[in-house]
Image (cartoon, rainbow, N blue to C red; front, side, top):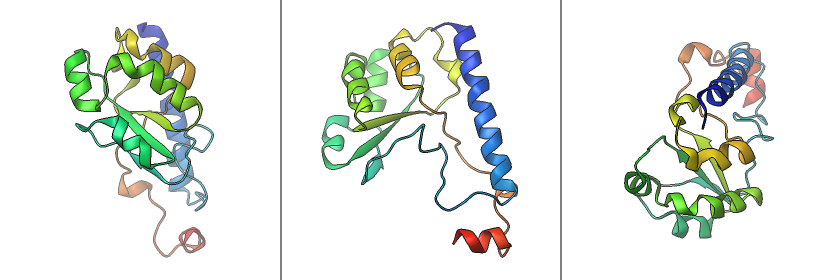
Length: 152
């Protein structure tokens, strides 16, 4: 994938995360909301996150949606070891994502996937969100605030 495409992708992801963190910090985040938003990460109950280093195909049988966190690993054998599926399985997983059986999120910065063309279908067809690894405490809704009481 081209650097320019990934830089634009990264900028869009950062803008969405910035908006989310602002809403969260202002205490306007409602209990029925989530990040990534429902229109970007469609989930069928029950859902789970895939277990790294384990075969993915056994995991997806038992859940409505399995969330797959993608890491920018260039070597195919290492990729398969970490993710539990091979690069040659990506097209089949894209088909499963279209019906909500799996969903992808980016575990690394979008620009780190440069020259990994095997991810192109995931980026262009599914546009997976970049996850926020952690939320700093200063961004949280203040405990005891009116908005905190409404959210519980």
